[in-house]
Amino acid sequence: MIPLQMIEVEGVIIDEKPYGETSKILNIITKEKGVIGVLAKGAKRLKSPLRSISQVFTYASFSISYKENKLSTLIGGDVINPLKGIKKDLNKLSYLNYISELTSGVMKQNNSKNIYDIYISSILKIEEGFDYVVISNILELKFLSFLGVSPKLNGCVVCGNEKVITISAYKGGFVCKDHVGSDYVVSDKTIKLIRLLEYVDISKISKLDISDDVKKEINDFIDDYYDRYTGLYLKSKKFLKKISIL
Image (cartoon, rainbow, N blue to C red; front, side, top):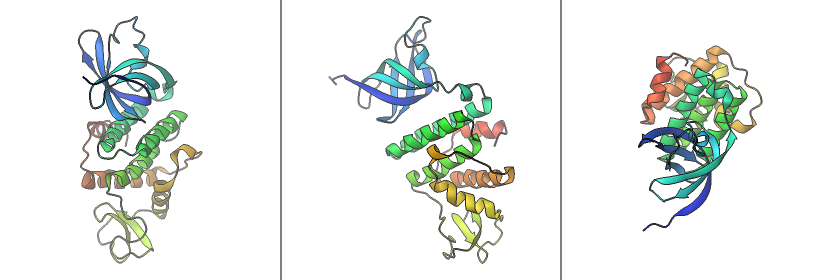
């Protein structure tokens, strides 16, 4: 019999499934244990002490009866941030759903705790009111290194020339004028920003002033790159495209 372990974990509930008439199973992205499944017994009852702490996209400190590689049990918790600003905005909520699904997918391939830190920093910046598309793009760029498929951003992917004029998902990174071929040529600002965004500390961002044209070029590149190299095809991404907020 596997002994029970009482632990405290920080995390975000990313989805839920009904379990019986009054309970539900939660998937929680946690800092300490990665993505874990947790049973919230009786959480659907109106007077349950677990009702408020077991809602999707609750960012909290959870008390859990933990079982390694098995379904754990939720005991209680304390909300860290209710994320009210995100939850009242459909676009922000849709992006939170997407980056949560993406984070879960990346965590299945890499157990670095830095993945969680990037995820939480991104959520909090969106909650503060920063551009949710740009913040999500920064997260996406950073996650590529954990997936082992980072684009080449220190020179032309073909010859290494540092004087690049565009970025190509097909070729895998920056491209110089001698090897651009039929690739779409992005603006100089887009090239500079992609270099910057890969290394910026999301938690320390205090200003984002990016034109719509540049945002679109960055997002189009990242979108194409993920489709080509990551093998991650997420329902939440398809939904974003369907409601046309990219």
